[in-house]
Image (tube, rainbow, N blue to C red; front, side, top):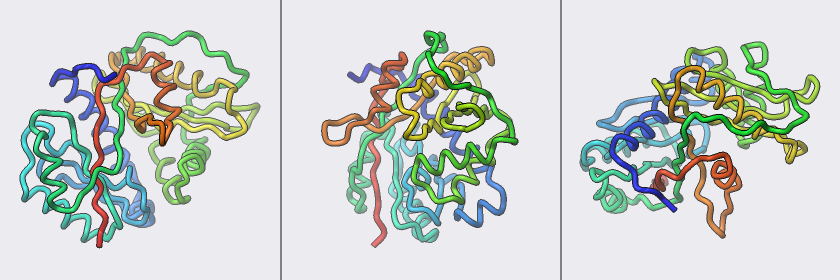
Length: 274
């Protein structure tokens, strides 16, 4: 069940995610910008992220539109023009659950957007998880293992190799913390977090299929929460797909098991270029 959310928490959750994703794009080398077609732009209130060489909606989306003030028709039209000029086949506008965004879905639908799916926004405090049982070794990594981290991300998410190389470029960057779980010397699972003030945003959780049930993700999450708490973080945030009978989302159920609470459901409105 979605719990009521006050405006302060809403702002912290949305801005924490936006800060991480924005820095992800700013981490890209010129080679990755060219290979992936990357561009990051502020359009009105929204942050518009583009990866024009990859039909990946998570990487082609506009966030925080309508978060603090009502969106205007001109802002939506500017986003349509921006993504059309980038020649992306489709993109998201994510609708925050704010009073200012109440009329945004109607405005989007009038321009040909449709509700594609929903993402769940979750959060917890930085209290430690119970000790995770695993026979794997979890380590914070540096650039020596950046390529391994990027490769696992690309394989797990079904992304082309250039996107994996871009992910690898965040390793060693300020405010980013990256971890791998090893079976002997073999990297088999990953996780990362980004720090924005007292907020820790977690993502890039992967695991090789043969390592299901070995406790890799529990151990990686426990380590990240512990390290985030040592850095002074008070809030841990994550987003997952909505769990529905038609499309189960194991990640969502796992986060609840790890003490996360649902803050809200955030609709994604997709526009497909004609």
